[in-house]
Amino acid sequence: MDAYDEGSNARHGPDASSRPAPPAQRGAPAESAAPDVSPGPPEPDASPAPPGSYPPGEPRTGIAALSPRYQVGVALALAVVAIGVCVHVGMTFLHVAPPNTVTRAHGKAVDDWIYPEFEQNWKLFAPNPLQQNISIQVRAGIRGPDGMTLTTGWYDLSAEDGRAIDGNLLPSHTQQNELRRAWDFFVATHDGENRPVGLRGSLSESYLRRIMVLRLDRDGAVRAATGSSGVIERVQVRSRTSNVPPPEWSREKVSMTPSYRELPWWKVPRDEARGGVR
Picture (cartoon, rainbow, N blue to C red):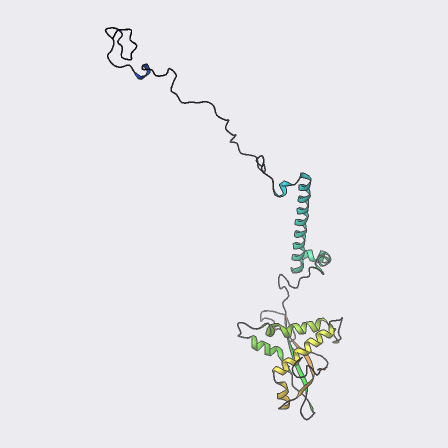
């Protein structure tokens, strides 16, 4: 092999190394083998978007979807509603609260706001609890089998309800409220002379009378008066009011003598005479 051979192992002179040439000298490309670092697309801006902004192309919802003019209208409407709610809550609080400086000065305005649409039938506190005991009593005129009419003694119906409630963990609504509410209904629709005031006067009389007849029938008043059968012809109702005695440490002086309010005799219709409407 002469010096002009272009083989990869050709020698170039007598001192040439017998070791093979490095890979770069054995036909490797002249370009560098470094990876391609051509620039890609620009990176997005990592800074946070301002509050309330929406990404491009995303639809807006709620109030933000409205035009500025309508947004102002909605804000004004919400403000009016909020003010109205605050005023109503404040008026209701003043109505149910105990008498105070504000109600003494503006009580007429509070009543005009509350009545009649927002009437409240309760109080926030009990500044003046009842200081009287009111019991409802009734007696009846009963016609016996012999045609004679007998008058019974007074039945204390409130005392009967009290005994039924005392010690009863679950007293009925009838035992607690029926008699009391019927009497309150009557008093509210009649004057001091027991004359009806307004259209509900006769209704309250009929309601109270029916309760009396039913209670007398339950208590066996007819049999107790005649010893057998009979018919309730009329009833009379009265209330007995006595003051609650003050505590021992109080200097308050009250009369302990009970007062009575007797109503006139009421004739019992035939359909109620045997214990209520049938």
